[in-house]
Image (cartoon, rainbow, N blue to C red; front, top):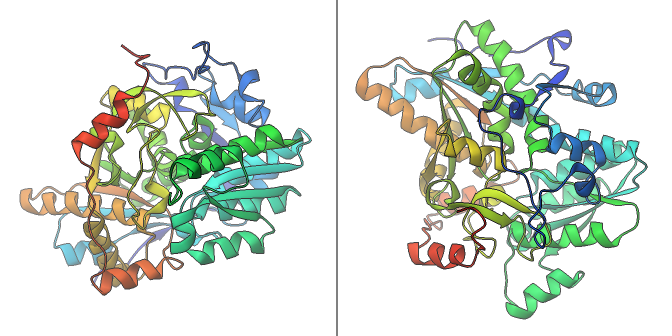
Length: 455
């Protein structure tokens, strides 16, 4: 039996710069625009809400490499590099000739990739004199990471967690509070946006769109407070490229290069994190790698959404972003992959989809848990429900290799563990979970309400 191999970089080999794919894109992303004037926003405009350096990074289409601040790099060294692992037992169970590798982002103390961006965002906020940060979270991985990073840099944190996810995953709220954050279920009665949403629908179970509305409002109305975000925006994907840059070096240690790169998809942070460094070789060197984003069947913006300017939140407080979207009024099903229940895709991802540099696949909830169970029983790691989508897409491709006899190299990102998601696994094992699929008519109704800015 083949021995499982793990490839771990030494401290001196950890990347010291993030990779900014915007500098290499043939077609640059369209800019965010002001919802009233429809004029492009500057970084100074964004800095009213976000830390200034994050705002500059958001719109930077010139600099390919951006230095990681020394203070952030020192915190990264607490848990990086993360292992790249050859999944021999999964390969054996599938009887596939494919070589399957996964980047294990679940091993850091926060349990997911989210800390990679929480640390720099809080660092930049601290450096400009901010005292408070606020954010939204779905399943809670981002909220936990932000709460910890805020404490590391001496900031106060307020987190709005999607109400249904708060009920499904109560221990994530406990983790945030342990780190000192104030946690509120969204929609709530603590903001004008939350009150308006609950007035229309008193039983609203929440979405990332509602939680973003409340967090942005708090940032706009609280002195010395900045808003932070765990996905979607360009600077978040930039920070996450530490994943793919490490994986590049580790794949070289393994003597292989991926034919496919796969990650689950909510707003795009962990997908961009592992994919963008490899994608630069496709853009600059002509490498023929396939990039696959695995989204829930119940939230199919990449495969069934429209490319249009839309708000990033439900209440319409954010700038308008050019994205593949299901409409900001979209009400997602209460699936357990709470981090993937978002109506839109990040603007870089959306442009790359348009340019056919990557594509999305829809994964039913039950198929995702089938995959998670197989991965747990073969590799000994219980994956987060979000990560199960990437595993399911990987299994699909590995079985295609079995049928064709092709020995492809598949790399996927294990974005987080599922040890605080065991209620979901219990429900799956007991047969209490089901698939959800959104009707075409509902998507058409939501997107028809968007102002047609892109012709």
